[in-house]
Length: 436
Image (tube, rainbow, N blue to C red):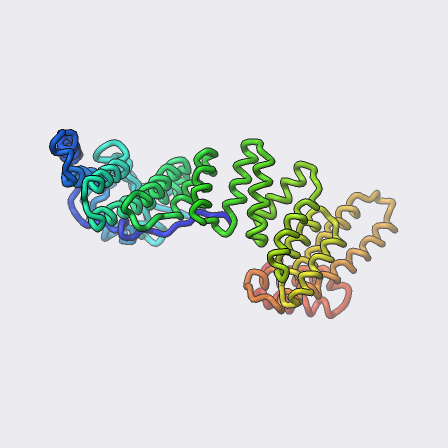
């Protein structure tokens, strides 16, 4: 599943307690340091640029004085002297937060009354303060400042960008989040920084794609690939979506073909590839040809036959689907997904029968009864494979899915005999009596 990668950079998030200073003082300090950096003689000294960077960082941190994620509202109230001008409840990604509005920032408390995150609404000094600070530190390094002095400062800036980016991601502002994730990624690769943040590069692309900024998304996904960061193949699926947004089906196929060869189990790649071939009315056998190349490299990998089975299931060529799943079982009779795939073929056949039954004329009751009998047989045929998948799998989500299908199937078949009623009760108990 494609998702944002996030690890809170606590070293940056935890602020040192100090009193917020007037914006005018912050601007004055930046202007003074900037004036020194523009002086021909002083500009040749690394210390001048270190001071400028520190001034920018002080201005950046100023609105967030005494704002520490993880503290409760009572503690925050004692530490933060200003009183909120407004308090409201907001819903963010399905969660409820109390938003408190202050002169320079908004803070968000979760339902437990803990400060979850904050956003600066009025910076003490305008502009990209983190970016300017990074440039100043880079200049100081160029002029002879030591690695040990610059590296941790750049990491601090990258972490600040990253945490701010996640805040805007939570707020649903994907364009702003992408800008900030980009900042984190770029700064983390500036000399002499020793900790490149590839998660930030991925997230810059992820949020850019969500904001439909396809150029940046493509650029940063490709930067990830250049650094051998593939997100378990998800990047290839995302690049195919970007290519399709640009109406470049050839590029989309190439990305998916490359991804499938290395990541045959990736559901996003498989889904996008099948949909692409179906949309373009091309022969899905071409996908199987790609799988054949992967089989040459991994002849004992049953998951490749599971993918092939899914392809044939998707185009309703059920005989070939079953044959592919059976090949996977022949390689490894403990591979759960081969049995699961076989069972899903039965359910797909059942769906087709139900659709055909619903399309019959009311006078065709004899045919309806015949098809109803076929449907019973199809449902019965799915049970052994779901049971086997449940037996051999080590994945809880597969067990739960199999148990749920078995509960539903036996419920549908309970009129066929007591054994189905008992089986229904068994699986209902296993699932904890979850509703159908």
